[in-house]
Image 1 (cartoon, rainbow, N blue to C red):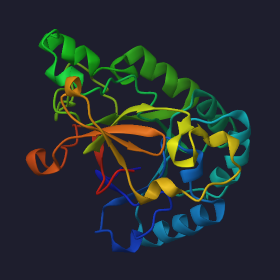
Image 2: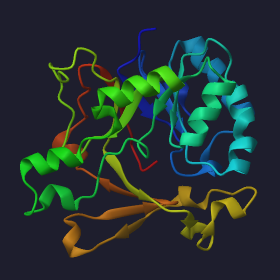
Image 3: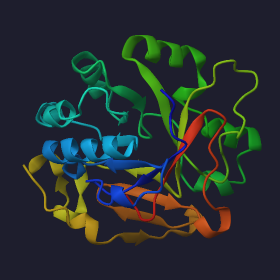
Length: 266
């Protein structure tokens, strides 16, 4: 199957897919909160709409507790067979479960599991050499052995990384690698860290509530500390750092890959 080279994030429920240009895919869901996943009925609806437009889908998923993963299974069952959808997985248990129960799903390793470091201190650190900075930009996807194991054992077909100024995937991939990984490059917002406690619901775990009205969708908090070299943006349970989209523009896809773009914090 030929993959698209661009996805646009349309929010947790993928609203506005009809307005996408031809050839651009829709990204939806969340990498940090189970309450920001679409309902099963909505997933079936957007899958049908995407199929009618021949638009690919990218479903972003978070880490799960056992009960949360069990409760989310109807979401994955709602994806019709043959739908052009990739599921970005950010939980090793979910990876095993989804591969076992839904072997037809195309699975990729999400940003939380990629192993890449995104702290803004890395780019401006005087203690790091350029080689040291490059090391922080590597991850699971950098190891041919790891890629081969994940592909053979769990059917993993791609990896998600952030577009950060100090460590960007080479546009032409690594010429030394005859089989470079398929990379989804996300920008302009990079995930730095994710917590379990959600300040939007009183600092308790999102697992402690059965449902959530999603108050985090209404704004963000800017966190500043001189040593960071840049602001951290808090939304929901995640902290992001953002490059200046006007300065660097749309991220360039690597030789084997796609870009995932955001108009606002996910």
